Length: 209
Image 1 (cartoon, helix red, strand yellow):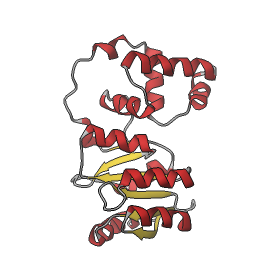
Image 2 (tube, rainbow, N blue to C red):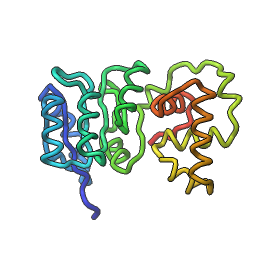
Image 3 (cartoon, one colour):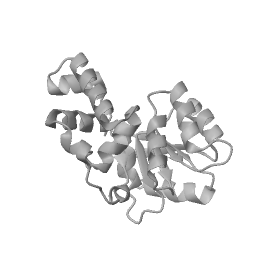
Image 4 (cartoon, rainbow, N blue to C red):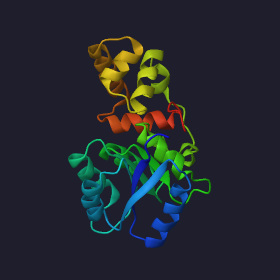
């Protein structure tokens, strides 16, 4: 059996943590090693317990999930963070990915599969709640103007690959990938990788677990 995925649960409501713990620990490949009731406590416990995944509530007093994500990744950049949120608005999703989170799941989803999401982010993959993909997609002339190569690179960026990893996958030089990334940002009027990720998700380019 492979090594268990260790998880820190972060939510300011003990009953919510208890419910999510049950969902996660139904899977023998996952073990909850600790719980935190605030963002500040999450930062401290992540350093102490060194979990592979932090399941992080978005809305908390003192330090919210986005701030806590930034602080954790400053100290322990290899930690995978999965955000749990009541907010489906695009700006919340963008802020979470911009802070370095690998996943964003809606807490109130009827068919939430937390264990699968934990496994996906533990493996370095991005996860987005399928409910966030049902928003109406407007016709987008800019998207239509992208080349197939640019769309391919956009998808690989959204899946969390670095320029070096994309270059290896596509048989290109790192410099060529960097140029494609810069051209994408230019064409779409975007300035941050997180914006490209959200855009790719909206366009259905990212494979869902």
